[in-house]
Amino acid sequence: MKNTVSTFKQMKADGEKITMLTAYDYSTAKLMDESGINSILVGDSLGMTMLGYEDTLSVTMEDMIHHTAAVTRGAKNALVVGDMPFMSYQTSVYDAVVNAGRLMKEGRCHAVKLEGGAAVCPQIKAIVEAQIPVVAHIGLTPQAVNAFGGFKVQGKNEADARRLLEEAKAVEEAGAFAVVLECVPAKLAELISKTVSIPTIGIGAGAGCDGQVLVYQDMLALFSDFKPKFVKHFANAGEVMKQGFADYIKEVKEGSFPAEEHTFKISDEVLNKLY
Image (cartoon, rainbow, N blue to C red; front, side, top):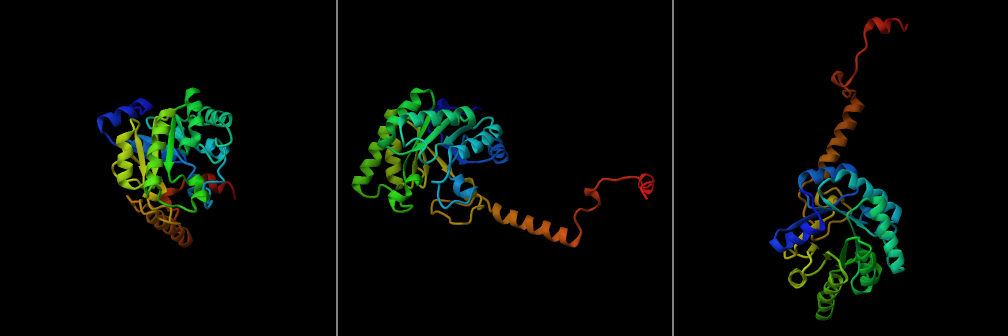
């Protein structure tokens, strides 16, 4: 079944958990889609997982459009959300609408995601008024890592917890149809999920959220630079891949690959005429 903004709303009403993973290319998106994932986020996390940056700040609109278009070609039923990169929406409401429009028009996604709470509500409102669905993102927002002083859990004291609760209400009021809660204490995330009417998608925010998202390289143990506390390895695909690479190298070196069954034939009669 095709996943849409409306099905997200209905899933929250029915108490059905929403599943989301990141993807950045056609082949991976196609596999996820065939597995029945509800939503695919083309995250600016591609800066680290695909491009090797130390954070997401260097990712450009062109990077996001390129990868988002590849994912949408592979996903037929999943709701594809394109991430708006650093400084593509913070500069002005006008820039936010233009860049969101580019992600939709050129990347062919079904919604956009942007980081921030009350400060970006004017952008959320304007993008929604342009008929572009928006996923908000509060808590630990990686584009603000320098302002936070590192990757830290958010909302642990009363003031910060109250602020996050108010920001969730604010992005809902601005028109976001869902909100990502990242690195938020589980009980606070559960309270936020019960307070707002839009679905909450947790990452490091406990099981009380309406859905979950993970970076696919993290959950398949493909990305070994670091492992956040909230990540579970659902498969050790990284080790399988490394073993496959090693076996390939070994067989090529020793001459056992390609074997006869991997080659094409030519008759000796034709070959003899070449000498």
